[in-house]
Length: 261
Image 1: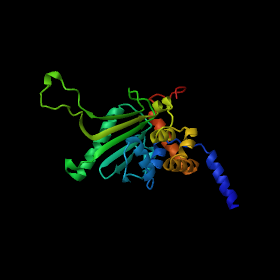
Image 2: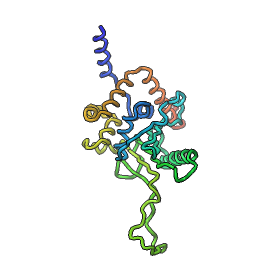
Image 3: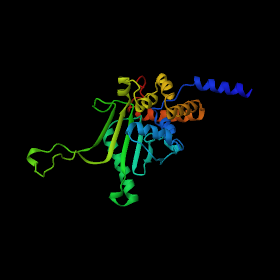
Image 4: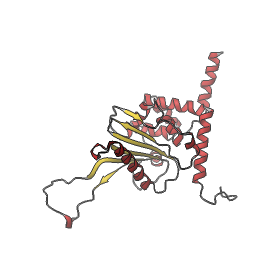
């Protein structure tokens, strides 16, 4: 009987509708949960193109009140290699003024770090990663990296200081990585690197998900946990609560008039 029950459970897991990793609650549960550092490390290495020796998730818990708070942000805060603070967010709601919001996010991270260290020299590098379900930026790339860059020297302000090459950036301390899933889906790239594998999984491509999980242990574990989460009635209910809250917030004023919702 035990074997039969196990087989039935496995069958149910295969038949269940997978929850979308592009939902901020689901994303947080998979990538931001304690003991899931290896999964987050794999995704971050794919985005940042660096080797991460050490990673610590700073906010693994999901406050219960955050699920039905329309303006709450379920981001993931982490520190890597003891010298870089990272905030990664799956943006599912209104993307109005997203550029200004990203600047505010990063400024808060830096300010919070300086309060602890009290010395500007000890302020850590800070990176904000935003994954968008919308096409927002007028750029021909699904992954955009933004930094604090100098404009070209104005000829009338030129002073011959002997620099053969001027500095391009004010600092490399702050960086923004912005990923737009609709652009990625439009391109439909061949799976050439780890980032593309992860974006197929996050984007919910079931066929590619099956292929990618067989090529990477962290992706395999993420898909396993996502499948288990999708079959869990309680966690599925929490996802639906979050979705209802988000949809209610995104409905324009007056949309509840009969025939317009």
